[in-house]
Amino acid sequence: MPIPDVLMPVESKGIAEHVYQQLRQAIHLGQLKPGQRLVDSELAEALQVSRATVRESLRLLESKGLVVNRHRRGTFVAELTPEDLRDVYKFRSVLECHAVRIGARSASDEELAALQRVIDDFHVAAAQQDVEAIVDFELRFHQGICEFARSKRLLETWLGMETAVRAFLLLKYTLFDDSPLIAGSHQPIIDALRRHDEDRVAEILHIHITETAERVVESLEHELQKERNSREGATARPAGQRD
Image (tube, rainbow, N blue to C red):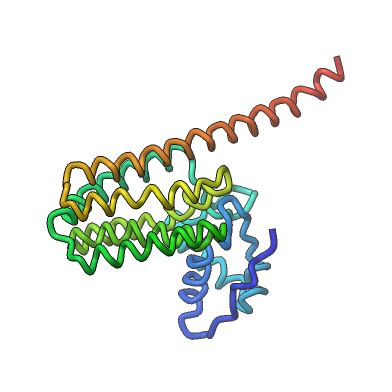
């Protein structure tokens, strides 16, 4: 897979950090795909830096869990396993349901209006089948919910999962496109917030997060099983031919 042309040459000062930030952003936005191999010579050429600088940046990305180094195979953008996905969405649900309860008690009309505008923009992006914009609006909506908590630590924790959540959403739209339904499924959350119905809004949000996520996990497990079956079949055929 070619290196995306969004990567730009960087200046010499703090060069490894600049390279790290560019690669991190490309992974975050899905421009470098989960499972994509990162070849240091290709990255060095695209960024116009030394291979040593690229390797230093890749080690930093590996320390953050964004890439993995596989012995004798190279460095790859980290992929989310079904177990990873379940862990992320369960933790998301805990954080966001806590925050949305606070929002039901204290969110201002201005905050709810801002969240409504995100949903309205979400509908436009869904109608245009603009997947990147859909993912951006969905993340913006859920970040807005977390901001209701007025907790710097909660928001930082959620933002720490944002790359994984973005990868999950991009994966979802690769497996199946339910964007028109998803866009509409956010409206009941806003409606319950406006009614200050704390229990109901937490219930709706929990279902919204977990049902969609479990569907993605099941689809991913099915795709992975198909790949395993295909590999096993390819391995078995030559043996059968020799018999």
